[in-house]
Length: 179
Image 1 (cartoon, rainbow, N blue to C red):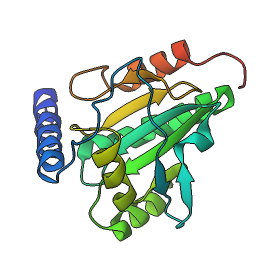
Image 2 (cartoon, rainbow, N blue to C red):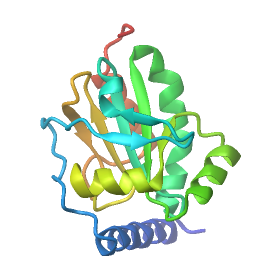
Image 3 (cartoon, helix red, strand yellow):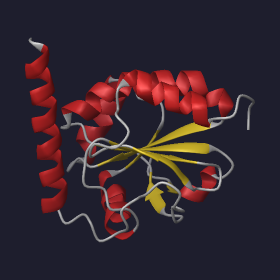
Image 4 (cartoon, helix red, strand yellow):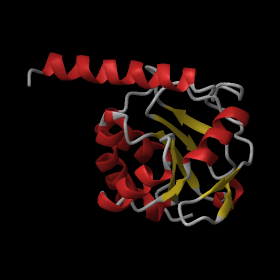
């Protein structure tokens, strides 16, 4: 495939993801911006257990807003696995916030692709997106410092999601020692 076709395909998928997010009623929350504090929120993981974002306090947290139907999101998973491997010892945790319509779709994908980080159920994600954070672009990554302050926001043309750029930013922002 020619490079320009691939870029065009990614743009089309991203625009489609944005339209789906807008049509599904997301957007009552606050648009995340660098420097702002993310409120504590509750979510349900795939195992059915309730969690709160505050459980990650003291760690750098990469919130990954994504869906299995979003091609750029799926393509990003290998980069996130690499980031986890490289930076977990420096305090990085990843939390997947999936926007699929069916829980079974997410569960099958996570199992098949061996996605190792905690995943929020689609119902929980929609509550977070309606009440806490307005995400209008997939994929969106939000890097939080140990006090839940936003260090980095990607998506919608902000901070490119190219693998080298994400890894470069994590290397720059995360401390060299363990938390």
